[in-house]
Amino acid sequence: AAGVIQSPRHLIKEKRETATLKCYPIPRHDTVYWYQQGPGQDPQFLISFYEKMQSDKGSIPDRFSAQQFSDYHSELNMSSLELGDSALYFCASSLGPRGANEKLFFGSGTQLSVL
Amino acid sequence: KQEVTQIPAALSVPEGENLVLNCSFTDSAIYNLQWFRQDPGKGLTSLLLIQSSQREQTSGRLNASLDKSSGRSTLYIAASQPGDSATYLCLAAGTALIFGKGTTLSVSS
Image (tube, rainbow over all chains, first blue to last red):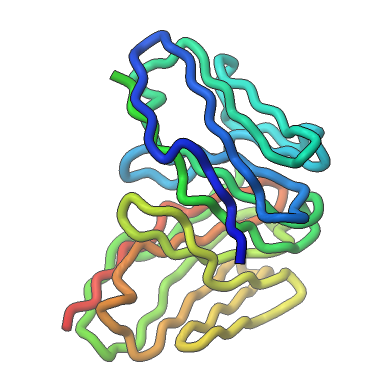
């Protein structure tokens, strides 16, 4: 069965550079969630989209932005990268808006290292 | 601010033991709770989802329960195996989507 696809798997950037992470949800899933997981930390919710509209916003820095496209894939854009942005970034997808009682399925994540 | 707490933070058991992982939450408006497994440096694998109207969900050797009134969920693992070694996280979905910090399980052979 198709799963959530994230690209790239690994990304190395320098301070003040920009990065774009991509997420392709499971086919027919219309909701996408972004999480950030620092070393030894629990995943922190960043932002989510339902039907191409932002649905919830968590602890996403102003330097980050995200959107969901017409094919339901999503991109997380990160600018002015800082050392503290080094983390594993997960994308998850589900069917229906939050509250629809559907499982969240997670991708394998993008490991971002900022040097 | 809503909180999700997992106890214990770490657990080491010999193979074959039955064990219980705990997850407590403060959000009285949760509509479901999902348990995940995470191997080091890897993604999150969904184990079980319990809706707020349900009391239990079972999958193989795993059984998860939910008591919304007391703000607690438990994950019961029967006859543990070394392959069960991983970090187990609960995700409470309600006013917000909040993860606990996880319980790191080590099962020795």
